[in-house]
Image 1 (spheres, helix red, strand yellow):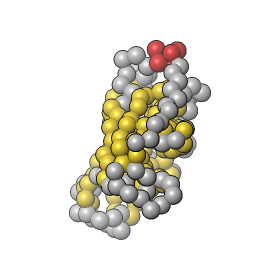
Image 2 (cartoon, one colour):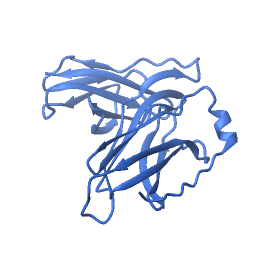
Image 3 (cartoon, rainbow, N blue to C red):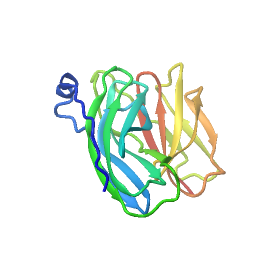
Image 4 (tube, rainbow, N blue to C red):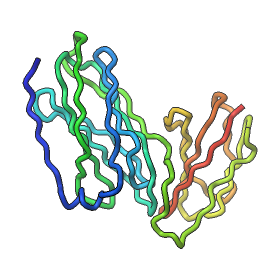
Length: 224
């Protein structure tokens, strides 16, 4: 087994600001020489999309840095994960941290450790997949702002849907997710009622996230 050194750093002022909010439940699933790193039930800014950055610290010690882009005045619970393939045999430690767009501080979440036993003919690991679940809505931080969720008509649907969004602002965007949480379609909404062609989508359950600069809402529909 390799002797690994881990560089840890904490920002106490940032951590104090997070008291009472779960930063995430860390875990890992090892399959052969692949590892799926998981950060479940992470309480985060609901307007953020997280870029999963994996970097080398020292030896087999890695960093998983979740960089958020976008900011809205509400909270969500997200499940996040990233998959690493072609890992060499040995013990691994991963330092997990994140940064939201409204704060320049990096928040340390915790440590993931795992062991790879299967031999690997490749020279180094590669990131092959990343996942961010749809927003699990928690609460609005500004209680005087009340928004209605977008309405999907018809539901269930076959070829086309109509997204009714009464709180449309100047720049409002939509993004489709399948039941596994993978983003499959996105674009801009230009009117309070927008028709979309979904004939190419396979049958199943889908989520539509609609967001502008101040609000994000998620609706669900079924494609028959």
